[in-house]
Length: 188
Image 1 (cartoon, rainbow, N blue to C red):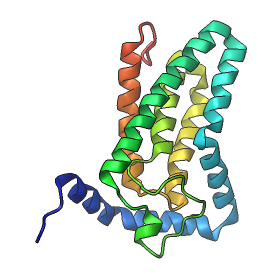
Image 2 (image 1 turned 90 degrees about the vertical axis):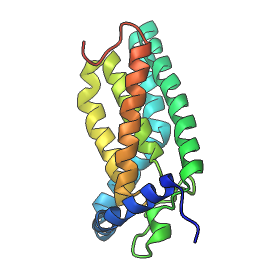
Image 3 (image 1 turned 180 degrees about the horizontal axis):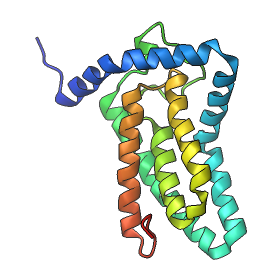
């Protein structure tokens, strides 16, 4: 009998605790029309629309400083994209709806694999970088980021552990990004 590589065992083992949470969240969203519509809209905005509009607004309202913040977000986003796509190809973790017939995809997924949640990774990284540049945006970005993360589980597209891992990766990526850019910090 061939033994699975460690990363596959860790990810497959995480699914055991994820199933119950994922199923409950998915059923809750499926049975009520407003959560399904809300989380589908948030998820769609999290595809990039929200972030592109935010970057454009920063440039429009704050000129060169907004351009610097937007460039910082874009660079962080490019690294996040490369990182999460590589992790998805490496782990090849199936999405919840592909593994458990009781879980339904309430919107179409953007790709085949689940780990990590790219929407969550980007939302966390972008929010932290944007908030470091503009602390007053925290009131908008924190609830939006939390809604993006929840949407991925409610819509049946990600396991909770995908979202938690993406949150940790996004925090780490934003932290390194902020460390590399002088004069920008969340601690200011």
